[in-house]
Image 1 (cartoon, helix red, strand yellow):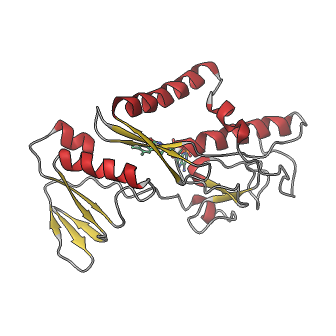
Image 2: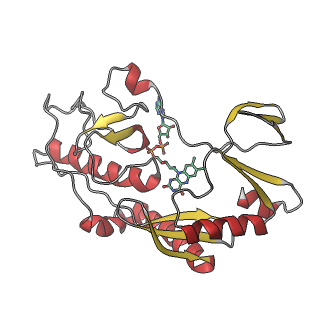
Image 3: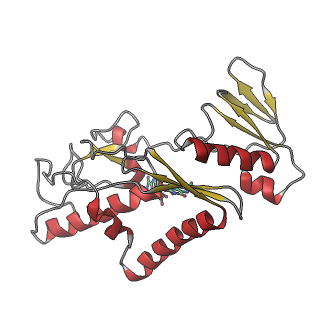
Length: 239
Ligand SMILES: Cc1cc2nc3c(=O)[nH]c(=O)nc-3n(C[C@H](O)[C@H](O)[C@H](O)COP(=O)(O)OP(=O)(O)OC[C@H]3O[C@@H](n4cnc5c(N)ncnc54)[C@H](O)[C@@H]3O)c2cc1C
């Protein structure tokens, strides 16, 4: 929304959310986000549940409905019903339940990673969908797949959070530093420093794709690791 409002300053922008803006942020971080949105002329409606989207109108629980010329829907991710329909053990959301080595707990011949999967056992921190979690899961699954083929022992998944980034247009950003379990620290960065840090994370990933060395692997060395006990079942890998 901030990107749109910044690019088209003459529009009347309204941000609607069921919860509160920046729920997972520190008080200072949330204040910064709200102050920046207000400065950009973006109005906020919090605690509003949208029940349906019609042409030029949002139906709202308890009313009043909201008229609009254009609506940008950004209400979280969904999971394909494919795994559930195929008979895999899945989470209530439909994600494949995997063991510490990223093998399906019901079909150990299948590795599942990323948004479509979730460890059945707690890794000590909540695993939310996102590229920040999808990449380490993918790396863990790929390593263990290669290890299984070559007869080496698998290693358990490890994960910890470091920061959350909220882009607030091209020139403003919030970098909320978080504890390992994703809960906010009191410390946060704003402005060019935060934007540069976010840019750096993208560049680090680009560097990883080009070189095969992902710098976040070093950051995760201190993270909690799941015991690498693999699911019982067929040890043969499907090829
Ligand atoms: C606009 C946007 C911005 C985002 N920004 C961030 C961010 O800043 N930070 C962050 O952490 N996360 C961000 N995310 C989330 C992040 O992109 C995802 O969490 C991440 O890509 C998940 O990786 P994945 O490999 O699990 O799934 P995906 O990247 O979604 O890949 C799944 C692939 O499977 C393919 N596929 C699906 N069904 C089938 C099928 N039946 N047969 C064959 N292929 C199929 C799809 O085409 C796709 O290529 C963003 C997402 C969006 C949409």
